[in-house]
Image (cartoon, rainbow over all chains, first blue to last red):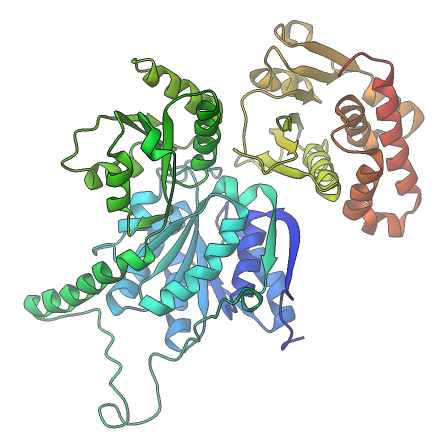
Length: 367
Length: 190
């Protein structure tokens, strides 16, 4: 079975988001998953552990998320396409290994299924891990964060995250949530090669053959510096590179922005409610539009400013108390457009709620 | 095309609410429709009220959860109370006629409130364990969101491994489905 491809061509399936991630990682050619159980991402591990061995893949359950993060880094150092997945308090613990990955420019792929916080809170759902995933750890947030909104995207971006991580050597995250993890909907799973997607082959980052400096460049992976200027120099190079490649990585979606008096901004699964509400309002002749950052890091700031140009007001909708809003405000600095908010920390948002809020704002009053 | 049909199913853990939802959405997908199903789950492993949010339509489904269902099904007293919050003026509220002590808790604002003798029918004619499939039959009969044929295919897909060991379970489930459809056949529900 080992030489067999997990997916031949493509096929339509109906499954949970966690199962989708496992299939996405298989399709991407991931070789090993390291992980520690936490709801609502458990089934990524379950499906991987069930499906993987059929295709010669491996799984290691570690003692906690700290070691899941570090073993993932270890796997990558030896040249494996490795990944991990976590949520909530696990995401907190994982920030230490992931800042090391950020410092040492080690490509890592992490799937986050956000749950309610702070602390244990709920096992269900939230969008409260935006700040943590984008800027966690004692670093500068030199990462790529894809916020998915559907099972098709979970599959597509899981595959893409591996190539992004290995191409740019910044940690890549899929930012899902408990709803996406647990719900079932249909999507098409496929073999990336059948769609012309070429996967970047990982190679060992340490223990290479040959004499360093003579036969090859030295592998110089550092996360410790004795002189502060030395850190500034190394970090400066990384920041410069991050900013240089950001325009290639940035992804977003926008609708009706030039005709909109009210521009609604949302990400992830909440975007689905926003898209429904906005399209319905547009069909009824209302002047609304939406802007959706797909990458939360790097953030599509230029594109947001452009989309917001003609708007009289913005509405930021999220299942958190202003984590997306911070990114929006930072990127709109200098613009005079008033920013309204609909914050529902840890709770799902329905299209009806978005519709109602939009109508109130269009009528000139806050709901 | 019309909007997606929204169905909320509430019951006690172990009443088969989630398998009901899974079979129904699986049948919709076999039918070539779009479907989305999300379970409502808490920290407790058992003992809580379990709710399944199901949407079936012709186009990709939007948001996973909804406030108001077209059909809200309640299978226990606590589920009757919990299911209330998903009832609106267009909702058909379905509950099992055998649930006691909930008269005052039945929704007042629903389009229709239907008491189905589902558990009684299942127990008398078939077996109490196919109670959830019987209710599913009633929902299918009332909404026609999927055909009985595809519902059977979906049952087969999900429970086929059990039918291999005990083939009589297949008939039991298929009969429960038919009984459920018949239960609402005479009622003005659509």
